[in-house]
Image (cartoon, rainbow, N blue to C red; front, top):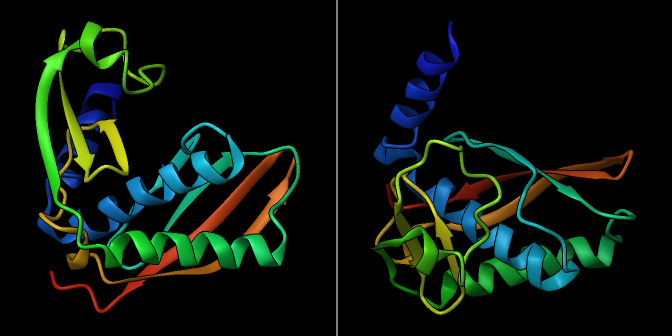
Length: 161
């Protein structure tokens, strides 16, 4: 499979409605990690319908108490029933509100920004739920730490899609 075919398959995956709750949860988790640890959004993520994982660059692993606090914080955002909206803006405008460092070099000059209420904004092309209450309950199922990378595995319970 060439790179273009792989990217097209990834784009198609994130257009599936069944992935929307998990994809939205990943956005919330990313912003929670940024706020709690001052780290960048996930370095690498693998999003699936049943369980997903994300990697964060951290100087040390979160404590058990911090892991519980991450889970609690994500669920509090979900429970706020925040609207999930999209808007389009120039790359110049977007650069003032989102991290553009992961975008491919050939990306359009007009970006789609996904906002989760007042909690998160991110350039993204995938499908998301309309309100965070559609996500379900976020659960961290395992995590590990090696060489400055904390990998967290999570799932959703009782999502509505």
